[in-house]
Image (cartoon, rainbow, N blue to C red; front, side, top):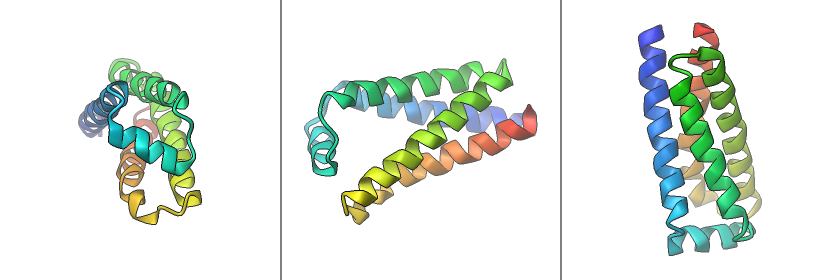
Length: 116
C-alpha cells in the first residue's frame, strides 16, 4: 500500500507542478479558457500557487503522510471547484481537462487515508 501511495503521490505531484508551470507561462489558450469560464485573469496567479503548493505538499507527504493527506484533499477540493466552474460556464467539452486531475487527487487522497 505504501509503495502505491508513493508512486501515486509523486505522479500526482508531477502533474500538478506541470499544470502550475503552464499557468506561470500564462499561455494564451489558458488565459482564453479562463476568460470563457468567467475567471478573472488576476486569479490565475492564485490558482497557479495553489497547484504548486499542493504538488510540493504531496512530495513532502512521502516523508510525512499527514501533510500529503492535507495536500491531496486540498487539491481534490480545488478540482471539484474547477469542474463546477467549467460546468457553470456550460463548456461541457472542457470538463475533460479538470476531471483527470480531480480523479488523481481523489485517488491520492484515498491512498493517503489508508497510509495515515
